[in-house]
Length: 607
Image (tube, rainbow, N blue to C red; front, side, top):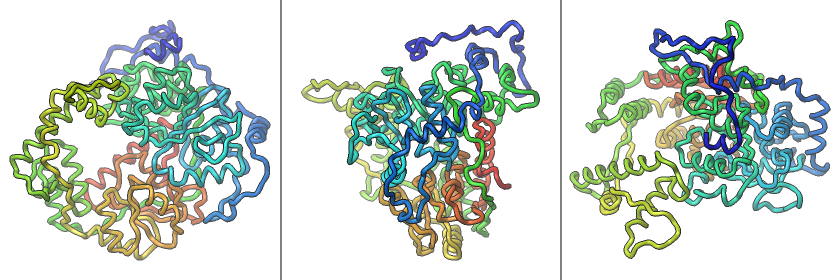
């Protein structure tokens, strides 16, 4: 609310209008109270609505293209591998996003995969009024293809000056391109304050969905200091699990025009009725957003998308079938099934007892792939030293966690920076510089022992049955084998005689050079977002994730514009309860995304 006060936002009265009776104080069979009336709901119901399709004419789009089109000249589109068509016209959604952002002064863009968000972000500084310095945040795995895409579009469109680029044209905005990972680094604690952008553009904005993360804290802190800064936030999936994932982004992009609540407690209350879960509250006052017989999520989505400053897509970027079918590599060894049950019971195969349910679930997923992780100690540290090391590490981590839960400040907003501040606090002679110190009570004990034990993670293989099945799939057809664990990916690749692409810049550059004439094994974490892999049309998802948003991204690597095959196929391993449950959860979350974001989800296209 402090930010809103500085913006001069006055909230409407908290009482409902006279013709709307307050929601009764009754409880449903679920035990949750219906969503009540609030000043935020009153404000949102009063927001002007618009029909985006009717807001801009063909003449508006033609004028925009004429303004942004580069002078005619030679290009290398036909010489690219594979050859690409010259991008001489804007897609309808690209033009609408640019026009709406320039009119409103910000944008919330729930735009699906394959609809051209990249060019939209490149051109945004050129249309935003009085933009001088802009920052574009992108995922780190998009950096390897950024230069090629910049040159591809730059041959046909007038782009802003690229910070550190080869040329500079006076009078044009300067665009800094930064990865979200860099925003998380220690040296980036005051990065935005050093650049001082008047426009921030977020591609894949869901990377800033967690306000507790260091990167998001730094982003929010800058807007707290510079509330006049404009924000354009684009994502194919803003909310994977909750509307809380992007309420703060909507607030900063559209201010008092945000179609989501501004007050945190109201966001929380709305989430009880809108978010997926086993216990969902009755919509109560949120029914005011809905038309007769309309689901509350769909009413929320419709109202959001009809708000000024919101540009959304509601159709797939590719009109080709997507076939998703289960795969049962079996039979699963009885020994492996027994170890999976042991893990669910709280014990690792080597006898280690789990302290948290999440550890048990993670181990069961690993065992479903044929292995499990454990710590090993190649230096031979004695058990009592190892026990003391873990105890003091736990105490230190807890104190760091508690400190980060409070107000985050520059040079004190990440575990690494807190460590440096603790070191400065215990220096002898005392530190006299200008950076802050932190007198952490557990630092001395942890500093004395943290180098005494050096554990290393070790993968213990129990069965190769899944490896052999995936390798056979890769040998007998051409496609992408998707894996969660690098150990699994490397093992499948060796067995099949094909390359494995894990994390890192080199792998990101190399996978883009694949022709699609051989199978590959790819890390879901490293390559399931942002990459153009439409040279492949078959997928084998060996370790299915439970995140519906991640599935949308993964399937969009091959089911995207430029796909030449008549159909895209995906097989999903479903040989254990853990993988079956993950797939069911993913579909439930995909349905939530479809209902609240209005985006057709690829995971729901086929049964």
